[in-house]
Length: 154
Image (cartoon, rainbow, N blue to C red; front, side, top):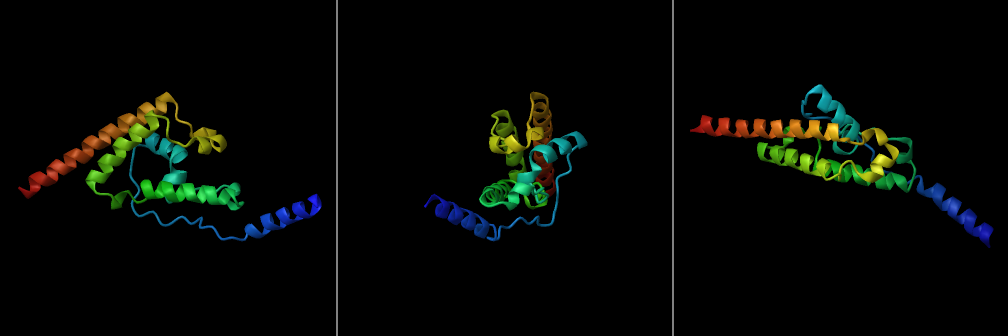
């Protein structure tokens, strides 16, 4: 009986490997252009889930893990996609920059489950401080652009 159950489980496992999972990387339409040190941090800690430049590791091709990975990437891109930065208006960009500060300071990002397999993505206090400084300066830049546009219309 145990042997039949084991064979059935193995067969099911093999069959479900053929369920298609979307691991596409759509084109980058408008990446943000941060300083190089910030770009390095974002690419190491954020881009796999929050850009169209996801590096799909081997385990993202193995069901059921592939469902978890693609689900996280889909959800991450929906919330924030650095590769589509050009599609966000100034208000949304300012809000995203505020959220980046909040999420990294509270330790919510990167996700703990991501860090288990990607320890290099961990954000130490120095990286968090750099991101915060960059995001705050970006908020100021977005706000100044908003004021310039308002002034131009008047």
